[in-house]
Amino acid sequence: MGDGGRPDGASEPPRGRALLLGVAFTAGWVGMTLEILGGRLLAPYFGASVHQWGAVIGVVLAALSGGYYVGGRLGDGARATSWLLGALALAAALILLVPPLSPALLPWARAFGPARGAVVAAAVLLGPPSFLLGIALPIVVRLTVTDRIATSAGAVYAVSTLGSIGGTFFTAFYSIPVLGTSLSHSVAAGLTIAAVVALAIALRRTRMVGVGRAPRAAGPPGRAGAGSGHRALRGIRPQLDPGRGDPGRRGSLPQLHGGPPDGDAEARSPDGRLL
Image (tube, rainbow, N blue to C red):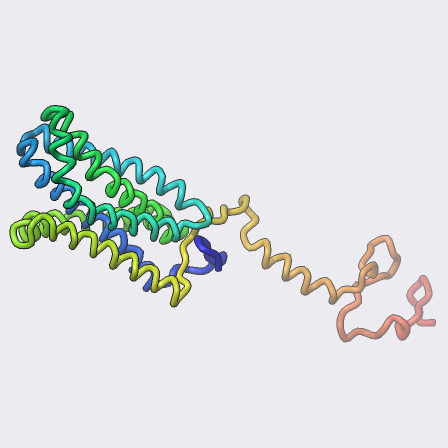
């Protein structure tokens, strides 16, 4: 098996598929956690205003959009799984850097004004990790795709959205009030790293790899089963004696298994009498 491809006709192992859906769930969870934490970080400098939340939401959506596009391109390549692991690992590292960078970056961004400054701060702090999390989803779709492409894609995005819902409630109602902003970033990064480690271990132990190339297109109508048909024909051809079924040869018939050899055939006159 190559990285990013599995043999034709092989189905995705159920455990591997569940793990990949877990990666999508984690990406959705962490993405929404990062967005809410970003609003919390920007509030002391830009206020809990519509500009601040508009900046956070707009930047995150723009970053996800770019990540989805790039992830789709990478997912069609031969190293889709490697790109998935790399994107998640780098996203975790950037999430860990958000709390220590904020005290120096946010006062600098405030110099751009309440509206533009909020956009700049959100773009620098939240844009890169959100972009990387966006890369993950199309690749997960590619790794779990079957002949029912829409069903596979719908399952991945549904699971990711469920993760976003869970991350929203967890961050707003527990993580920020109980753990605080800095530790909440560490939890989000830890979940991402756990997904990377689990996927890497599964790939190493079971060689569970994704579909890195496009599904084989169906042949023209009437060609279904052509390969088996050709094999069947090859199995039948040796049973016939080439040339003996030629209608142009008078009195010739196909030589069937079990019939008399050619040298022992009975000789008859043109009018059918035995010679």
